[in-house]
Image (tube, rainbow, N blue to C red; front, side):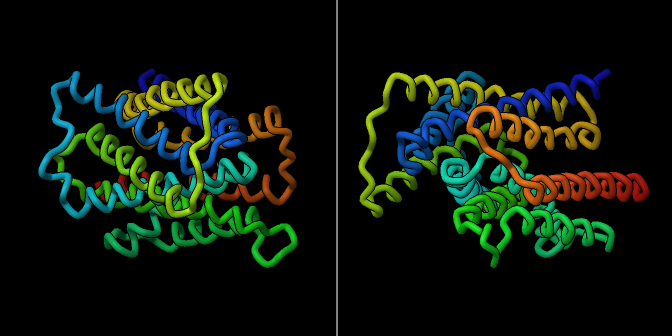
Length: 290
């Protein structure tokens, strides 16, 4: 019963993130990407900062200057900039599909940099998953768009964030990590807009609504993931993260009139299958070593 509740919470959280992505793409029709990133950063930091204060947790601690936390914040910055740009400039369905390769990148990074043991089966799953990414991007063909590389940037950045999280001091809470990660987005976005000479755009009432709803849904979706992991078994709940790609495909087709071709759908299926297999192998390896 707990696993069913956890899976339900995870699916609802993924639905929330898919709606947030949709609202970001709608805002991008009138607002520059840098402004959207900065708005999301400061808005999320304010909301999470308020929760920290309400819980009696400090916003900043000395541990936040440690290498892993700073590296995590850098990964959050790189990943968010890449993924938000990909959402704004490329089809939502393909950007979301590429993002699902993040767990494979984390497994790869854990093997290369954290000396975690990865068997040949998971290595094969990683290679197959990245082949799925290549099917979506299609470098060297007429269907290739360099803008799709922003989604790859998102995978690398968010993968770096997740890897660095494994070395974060235990006394630093998840909310404190999220607060710092969102906070650094605001000055970075401001610098990016200043360097590129991009002026701020006025928000219409509709875009204010999109922005407000995106922030609220994003916070609830974040809490949904945390609650799902606490209620159910991680090995059972985690695969339901991939439901996000299904919601993204429906929104892409229904809201933005996207028409993902056969190669994009095949690539998405390969990425999800590889990720699910990797999770299954990790669970078996841990069970056998216990």
